[in-house]
Length: 296
Image 1 (cartoon, rainbow, N blue to C red):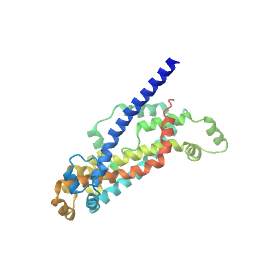
Image 2 (cartoon, rainbow, N blue to C red):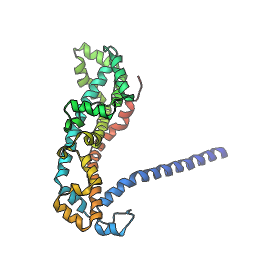
Image 3 (cartoon, rainbow, N blue to C red):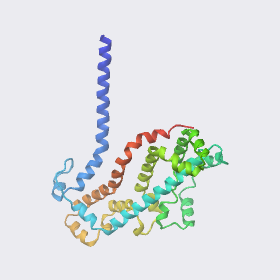
Image 4 (cartoon, helix red, strand yellow):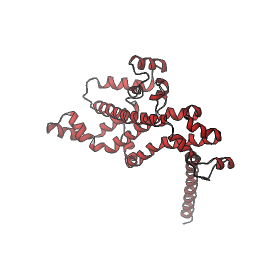
């Protein structure tokens, strides 16, 4: 009996320690986002009075007002929406169709294609050859440079293929008996029963596309075609170049403070679209990510 009591006590202590440890990690993780939000609503006086901004001491929309006055913000936001919507559609089309084809053991040259795909996971030509290839395709300084070259993620493709391998062959065999071809089977049978899995990688691709700035930085020189992440980068690095004269007149009165609030407001707004999408796909996330993790 005493041993049982001791075991229960040790378990309860360990549980408390784990909860405390996870709680500290959660606070450390959440605090930067929390700080960004409250600073974006800060006023000149509140930021001047508090060196460490832990509580929402004020509610001032000056940072957001300065941001919405800037036309380039709307343009870059629209570019990011287009790149995300078109890019994710392109990603899912290539990834799903490619993975489904590679999951067929009777596909001619299947092992060769798989080997070539796996090779790209470990080796690449480098940045300069990559740029030359994109340039030869005429995609430099075009939004297509942010969409076409990254059409398929090799990792996602392999996981999708492994998932399709786990589906019972009897489903496809019965459909073929009824006269369905491979395309009809994929669209009318495989995709409907794979909604959690598809939703998971839809979210992965959407986050990748929305947050991508590297390819835009390399290939886009026209500011009119720059996505939101490049606007945010320039806002954080060189705030003055992003503001029109009317907003700059306000900034000159208290330069360092409104620079900070506008920067944080930009970060908050850029994060909102993904925060809005995630709740609708979250219920499929845990199930979908585990389904495709089974090896062939």
